[in-house]
Amino acid sequence: MAFPYMEAVVGFMVFMYIFETYLDLRQHSAHKLPSLPKSLEGVISQEKFEKSRAYSLDKSRFHFVHSFVTIVTDSTILYFKVLPWLWKKSGDFVTLAGLNAENEILHTLGFLAGLMIWSQTTDLPFSLYKTFVIEARHGFNKQTPWLFFRDMIKGIFLSIIIGPPIVAAIIVIVQKGGPYLAIYLWAFMFGLSLVMLTIYPILIAPLFNKFTPLPDGPLREKIEKLASSLKFPLKKLFVVDGSTRSSHSNAYMYGFFKNKRIVLYDTLVQQCKNDEEIVAVIAHELGHWKLNHTVFTFIAMQILTLLQFGGYTIVRNSTDLFQSFGFDSQPVLIGLILFQHTVIPLQQLVSFGMNLVSRSFEFQADAFAKKLGYSSSLRAGLVRLQEENLSAMNTDPWYSAYHYSHPPLVERLAALDIPDKSD
Image (cartoon, rainbow, N blue to C red; front, side, top):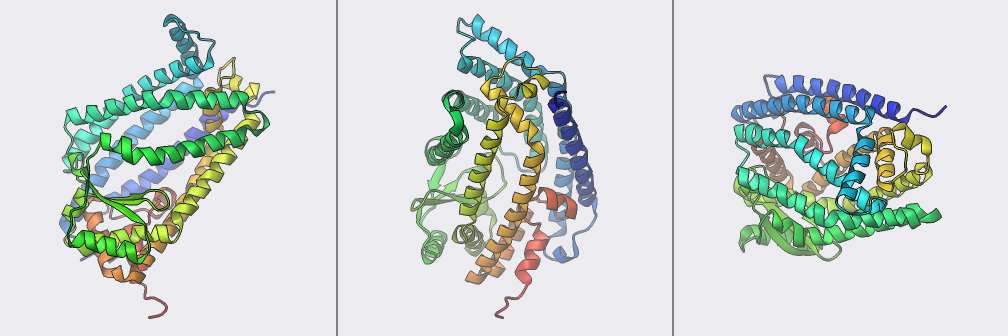
């Protein structure tokens, strides 16, 4: 008797929905708490707490609706075999367009076009509500409808340009890969990630945001001095116009080897009361680099990708897998999609493990900045980011342990307050 892959996948999806909804309800109750955690009293203003509480509750209610619609839609698509129906219809469309539906690449691109239309259509109402109702209600949204739809159109246009060559390459590799298929797929994806990391900040990101060099002045001098003291190969220091879309603030760094760049959101520069808070945040980010956190994460992701492709090569010729989901043929892309569904349990475990590692890295990066003498400034900067972004002040321990890649503010401040062993 064939293994019921589809029923098992749908059953696990429903189980995870119930489990995660339970955690969401715990976190929703935490959002309702009428007072700050004891350790944040006198640190976070009551006004900011009330605004944060209202924002968190609005997002939570929205999430309940969105997640329910998502699980109903995804389960329905799998259980009632909508994907094989779409595969057949996309072949008919390719034929109607005067092309050869027997060409798997063309057939697959037609299928992906249908999926894109579906996903854009179903997700649009939620995106609009989140942006122009929730974010606007709490003072974050700065986008106009024109800018919103312009960004969406640009994203679709980029997908149409970049997607087909990648899909075609994957199909050819799987068809010709032989016994070393997993290695070839990994090598292709590894090279592709390097290419995308290279061209994204140069060609893609500027399509959506304006990047300008941080003006000469005390802030630039302090950041460059800090980078130089750590031998961080800083080549460019930018400010990005994040305020054109949102008043949320952040900072990040990217780049290969000796070509590193740091990007500050203009909202971060505007919100922090002094340069030291910004420099402390940058010290934290440089701590990730100095402690090789980015290298570890990159290597871990490459290993996981290789293992995933190895698993795919084992099941890709399983007739039972395809038939369980309603397919009477075994297209390459469909095989990858179905395999991703069957390994959801493992993906959940890996995600949980990576969150544990990430939270540990955050504490280490905070400690690194503290050793550089930025303890009080980092503390002020973290509080400032928490306040200005209206992040949740009260967090449920089970929810944060499962979902958070960063420790809650309470835990980070407590760690910064622990005296060094040398003190």
